[in-house]
Length: 115
Image (cartoon, rainbow, N blue to C red):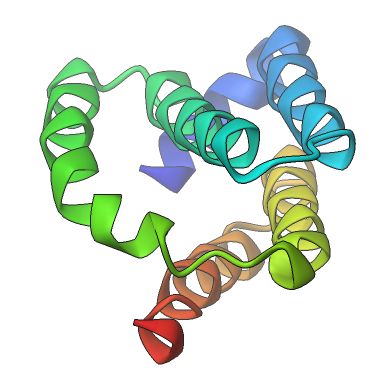
C-alpha cells in the first residue's frame, strides 16, 4: 500500500497536508478516547490515500481485530506514537519507501510487547 500512497502523495500535496493535520491534532489530544479516534482516522486516511478501495474495506474489517490493541496505549507512549506517525508521512513524502515500510512495521509491532 505504501508505494501507492507515496505515488499519490507526490502528485497531490493535499494528501500529506491531511495526514499532517491529523499528526498535529495528536499533539493536542488530552484523553485516550480522542487519541484512539485520531489513530483510527490516521490509519484509515493512510489506507484511503493509497487509492486502493478494496484495501480500505479490508482495513475497516481489521479495525475490529486491532481494537484489542487500543487498550495497550498509555499516555506516556503518545509522544513516540506522534513521532512515528510523523516519520512515516515524512518518509512517504520524500519517496523513502523502505524507511516508511520499516517505520510502519515498527509502529504496528510496538503494540505486541504491550498486549
